[in-house]
Structure formats: C-alpha cells, structure tokens
Image 1 (cartoon, helix red, strand yellow):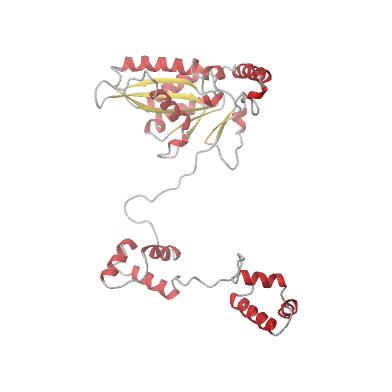
Image 2 (cartoon, rainbow, N blue to C red):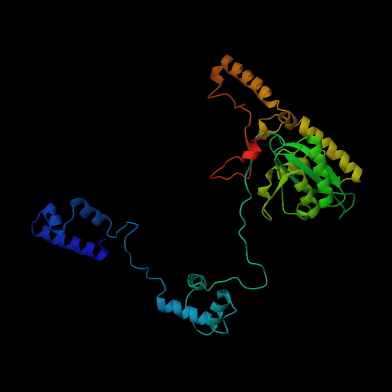
Length: 351
C-alpha cells in the first residue's frame, strides 16, 4: 500500500520532472507507476481501497484518554453510576473528558458495560418457528379477545380458532372469564368436530396465561398437537387471529355499546361465524369463502372465473393492457415464514 504522503511526494516529483521537459510516461516509469495510476492519484490523493492503511481520525480518543475515562468510572464514587450521571458531575467539578456517548463506547470496548439493577436484562427472543399448511387441519391459530358487557368494567371473552389454510373459523366460544380449562374444552371439541384425529397439526397462540396453562398443555399433548407461541408483546407473530378479530369488531352490526348479556354475545358470534365462513369472500384466498376453500371447492370456482375473464378479454382485447386477473388457487400458506429459507415441515405435508 502506498501512503497518502508517498503519493503526494510522487506527484511533486513528476510535476518537477515535467517542468524540466521530461515526458509523463518516462517520469511515471522511473517511479514504477503507470500514467493511469498517476491520473488517479491526481483525482484521488487519498487511497480509497478498503484495505488501505489510514491514519486514525483526529477526533478519536487516544489510549491515554481512554484509560483516564476507565479510571474515573472505576472510582468508588462513580462505580454505581451510568455515564449519563458521571459526565454532569465531572462538569460540575470543571472537568471534561469526553461526551456521554464516548463514555459508553469506551466502557463497551473494554468489557466494562453490564446490565445492573433489579430489572431483568433485555432478552432478544428468536422468531417463532415457521409452519406450512398445504391442506385443512394442519395449522391452527387461536386467541382470546374482549367483548364489552352491559356495564363498564364487565367483559366477555371470545375464544376463536382459525385454520390458516382456509381461514375458516373452526371453533369458537364466549365465556365470562379466561381460563386454560375452557380453552382445553374448546380445542378438544374442535378436534372432534373437524375430524382431524391424530393427523399432525400445530396450534399457535400468544403468550397469555390461558394459552400456557397446565390443563391446556396436557390436552394438547393427548391430542398430539404441537404448541407454538408468539414472542411476548409481538402481535405480528399471530397475524391470522389478529386480522380475524379486526374483521369481527369492524362489522357494521357489531354492538359498540356492548352486549346485554352472555347469551346475546354468543348469539351474535354465532351469526358472525356463519357469515364469515359461508358468505364472506376472503381477499387472502382469491375471494372465495373460507368454507369453500376448506371443502376444496376453490379450484373449480377459480377456474370458472378464469374462463369468464379470458372470454371477456377475447371480446375486447383493446381494454386489457396485460394479462387477466390471476385466479390461480392459493397454494401453501405459511405461519411466520422464514425469509431466508422456507422449507415445509415433512410431517405437515401429509394429508
């Protein structure tokens, strides 16, 4: 590597030679460089290559200054204080060593920055495992949401289980309280009703106490269901259930002032479930109803739509700037897909 000082000296020597009448090529040859290199040196006096040796920035703290910061932080009066408290105290004494961020940077570089206090240290939690659904009954998600009661402070609790492959509501219940026992009964009844038997399946939920109760865990084990959980306070890990709750509560007939009693809440949810499964055309599954996709009717329905669009384009091709709308059936549906590598789990591909 040629330093910036050597480059500048070479440019000076070549300029002196040219003033004396030497040709540029001959002067560059004496220095062992090409004319192209000379011109690059003129345009970029500093070596821009990533591996070039560069002088440290003039504002960088020296080793002695860093040791002074460490010595101050290790003093008894400052040992229990963060830099945000140390820097103002030094300023009150008429001393300035560096900025607060530089204090943190020096402490971190020397392994002297640790979490302290009674609060638990932040934990980086891994993203939930990815699951693929290629048919109904493979991957379910569920959650619990509040339904307002007749007076302030009174709530009912809506349990909803959705099959992510078809988006069908396969199980629901409204209770007066949250409990793992109620969830276990609902899930067991849903398994029997759907007839999934001992087929491999996954049940995803968030981290609420009913989702992780001992009663529910035992029930899932008996049914051969693999539990999956979201990260704490991350709603995006359970998107299908969260989206379903939004659809539920934004229905025009949803009682904004609350339900008069538990029976009224159950009656409304029953009607909503019937509408959602049998009438509502879901945008995520090419606008077929969840029940149609659950029964495997969507390929025929979408094929008929494709024919309609193809004929319409043949009648008036000038009205179409490109291909017709895509009515290809949705294939594999993923829960929390891995962006780098998405591979279906072998047992989930069995039907």
